[in-house]
Each structure stands twice: as structure tokens, then as C-alpha cells.
Image 1 (cartoon, rainbow, N blue to C red):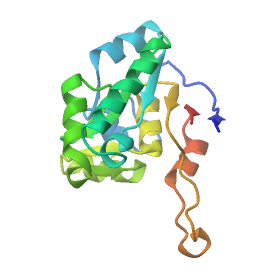
Image 2: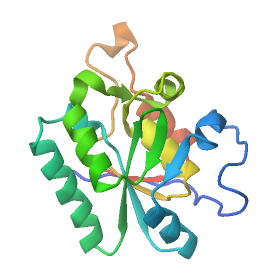
Image 3: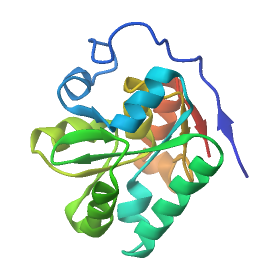
Image 4: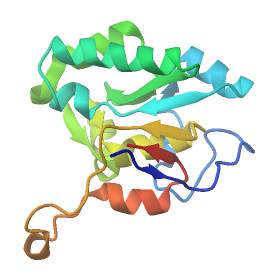
Length: 184
């Protein structure tokens, strides 16, 4: 079923790249790039919806992944909001991809793109690598970009055998830490 996790709204005060306690200052400074259309929509107070990118690189093969990503973005547009797919390319955190960037990400696939949770962002940025954002990384970067709503196909949880392995998704912690409305 559909679940909605609500958090308090993000403050619009202050510069986008100010230092914060969220552990991503360097990535949110020089290493965070908003697509011009996304930046304009945020500045004008128009609705923007963040989308994760792991499903693109790790969820299905090319070209099905590209077609699906474009279809999801179109659904968001048809509903009156602007989609902002979030990913890391060449060490830069991108919020809103150009058509060429979306296609490049889809073609690179899981062999050349890291599955990137919050904890992985710094390493991917430092090596100027590529990262497909999971729920936790997308929430963090959406928050830094001042996007209040994020849509995903699913939120991670406690993995099978988690009582022994302690394999718990970072998504759960992020839901309690980052003030973004997550619709799954």
C-alpha cells in the first residue's frame, strides 16, 4: 500500500549552501548542483518532487530503466509539479537531471554506478564517481536543495535475518532525521 511519512516543513530561510549539522556541508556547497528549472521552481515556490535514482541503475536494465524514469517524471509533470531526479555524476550531486544526464545514468548501469546511501556520498564525491541515490541519500540532498516532497517506490527496512546480521536500512534512520515528506 501507499505510505506517507510526514516531517515538519523545511525552513526557506538562509542560503542554500550554508553549513548545517546534517553532515553534508562539502557536498552541499560546491558539489551540489540544481538543474536551472528546479532552482527557478524552488525560488518561485512552485511544487517540486524529488525522485531517487537507484531504481534507474540497479532496478531494471537499459533501455527499460530510461523509459520508466521518463514516464515517472511525466506523471509528476502531469500532476502539476516539477520532477527532480537526484543522482551523483562525476562527483557532483545533481538535483534534477538534464535529458542527457538521465540517459547517461541509465546507460552506465550498476557496474559503473555505486548504490549510494547517505553514508556513501562523501566517498563517491571524493573519487569523482557516479552514485545512484537511495532513499536516505535522496532525502538528504532534497532537503539541502529545499525540496519538501520525495516520491519513491519503497522504503528499506530491517532485512531478513536482521536480528543476527543487524542489517537495517539507513532509510529508517533518515526518516527520523531529515524533514522531507516521503511518499511511497
